[in-house]
Amino acid sequence: MSQILNLSHYWVFVLLLMIGFYAVLTRTNLVKKLLGLAIFQSAVFLLFISMGKIDGGTAPIILNDDWSQTFSSPLPQVLILTAIVVGISTLALGLAIVVRIKEAYGRIDDIDASSSEN
Amino acid sequence: MIEIIGIFLLCLTVITAIGVVRTTSLFAAVMLMGIFSLLMAAAFILLDAADVALTEAAVGAGISTVLMLSALALTGDRREKPSNRPRVLSLIVVVITAGTIFYATFDKPALGDPKAPIHQHVTPEYFAMTRQLIDIPNVVTAVLASFRGYDTFGEVLVVFTAGIGVLFLLGTGPTTRRRRQLSSARGLKHHQPLRIGGKVVIPFIILFAFYVQFHGEYSPGGGFQAGAIFAAAVILYGLLEGERRGLAVLPPQFLLYMSAGGALLFGGVGVACMLLGGNFLDYNVLANDSVTAQQLGILIIELGVGVTVAGVLLAIYHAFAARGVQ
Image (tube, rainbow over all chains, first blue to last red; front, side, top):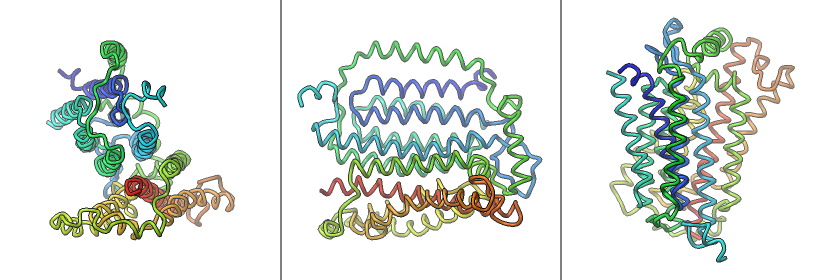
């Protein structure tokens, strides 16, 4: 039972990663592919944040100058915090490309097959 | 008990993710994605990552949903056409990859294990250095803005570059003349309850954004979160009052100055440090007392981050919104 609790976060990471991966592989709709990528990305966020957690710890913000408490690691939080904002910017870039593809080809499904017609 | 809640939340995220992939309605998929982000933010809180949860809630559940919906409105597709990709083959690939990573998880340290490598070298050192050199309560802000300042500067430039990319693809929004032609009937003006309720909330969202910005050293927050929250407030105003009045609050030209100005402010602090005889982004030389200098440097670069993030997110939103009018 404790083994399941200890590793459950990593298993959820694997599941989410694969759900996103499956969406990218099988969906032909470009918006859906981007949603798959976003899930994939969130899975990586979860992996990093899980690694920083420590038993009996609290958020790495020191209250009343009490440095003796147990704190979770701030480093993965820093990395992921910036990654989330970068993630939305790159997602917006992807969506902008999808909008332009729609304007140029008239559809965002199955672009591979339609490219030969134009 | 808290572990059970954590596992329950994570099960919900997995179910939501499956829902996102399985549904053929794109609208439903986008809304489920917003729920997914909110659940993720709750899970981050349980993992002691308050700053990350704040960012995920503001960006993932707020702004990203609005951007996705704008993109959907522009492409006009509501329903996904059935895919003809070979599902069995994809499933085999996915199962093999999942098996490999799953096998690797057994070598990972258990969740919360104090003996895990991450808690041995880097983390204690960051705490000790923050206490000695910077002396601010929020260690996340200290690491983000000072110890890993280069990294953060890089991220800000990536955000700026992505914003520029979107503007190149979609245009910078309507010109002043075109803006006058935008119909004033757009937006949610005729939905009185939404409009009045929204108007009551907007000032408090903006106040909260400034609090998160300037109190980021003492509580969860900082430039990234504040920029996203501020952008969310202005986007909400634009949604309620129509694109024309939304653009009047902060014109596209001004947003461009904001995007570039914030990044320049960040880089400028780095150059100022060099001119004063220190290294790039080495704040110690900014004041006589090195601890005060560090705090001053962090305050200024966080402001730069906030201005850039708010400017880029708003510019992106207006680019999408204005494309629909043309």
